[in-house]
Length: 513
Ligand code: DQQ
Image (cartoon, rainbow, N blue to C red; front, side):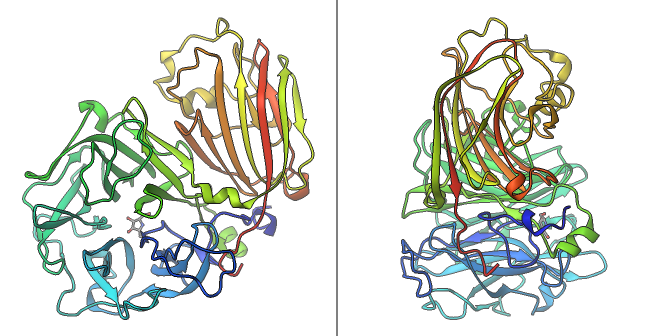
């Protein structure tokens, strides 16, 4: 059942208990040893995230605080930011961290100052003691707060989630999400000193999509270059991500940024309405940060329970997990981002088994045996088909919507080339909920898949990170030792597993739970 302790994930980020929202702010690696971690060390990542302190349902939002040296092992501390001033008296909602030029970290966040209508104002906090490596305590200077209030013309109930700020031409800038009628807006705020902020006349960008939550705006290096770019450095291209309150998905466009005018232009003018998604499963309110130690941009995303049954969440005592942090960069064609689990997760790999050159005939499947923990595994597989002649033509009736298509033609429906892939139950029982198209060149007949399986979550990366799907799953048979991994082929042509490696995954230090 959904309350089974076997569904609590083994290596995905979770608080010890209660509700968790998106991960908000990662302060970069500080290069200090953690006294209570034995497996060392590039530094400390003190991210801060909001959890609900009173139970496993949404409400009473504060910023809980966990620290990590590797984004995989986590230690929970006391909450960092909680209601304490008039402009955040009824809740400390989402926000971001920025590292100032002198090394001072700052957190900007949305405070709720009136309970009746969730009136939203932006606030700022600084560490009480900058030399505390864990940055445990934060102060909110009364002379600065709130730093931005919803003046006339701004919808005060839809005005939130300040981004990490970037510095350009003598000014800091940050975005705050909002909506005017049905137009989602990225308000720009500017400051010389990071203390006094003023709103720019024009938003950075807007589109008729409804409210934009948890905006993220960052530069990327040139096409195919895997390294990340600091938020204040010049990017070859820029990414604007908005979390759409309307359907709870994270959408992005790639475009250019005019610093002088503080305007953003998506490369594809229609992109605002046919936007790409970070993940075609359950993945929301995500945020990136730049890690200078490894010169990479890292994406952190939140996956709430797939069906929210408050009573069940209360009974199981927790709700929500975070995706395994993903490195993110522009693909060689410059048209989309690529994502791959951060390399640190590979430290959890234990015993492995490999299969090579195995042909799966139409309608057949085989079990990947030999893993003691199929419910907690990392599987990398490359498939090969000798010809695409039997591939079914693209049917426009599905509106270019992979989820619609797979809703009708599931993995157990026979196809031409495929469906084939990995399954955790016998193939005829497999029922996918999520789907995405991969824009990949498969003229050589090869396509790869990596799946991180962890009790109540499966995170899959198709075609080298072109299409990612995080799915929360609540198995009742494939639970604990009842979980098995199969390779199946429901197509009309042979599929070769050219290579498959599956690893058992160890449990990291996870917030004392
Ligand atoms: N939920 C937060 C907001 C954010 C949204 C409050 C994301 O700040 O916009 O819990 O789910």
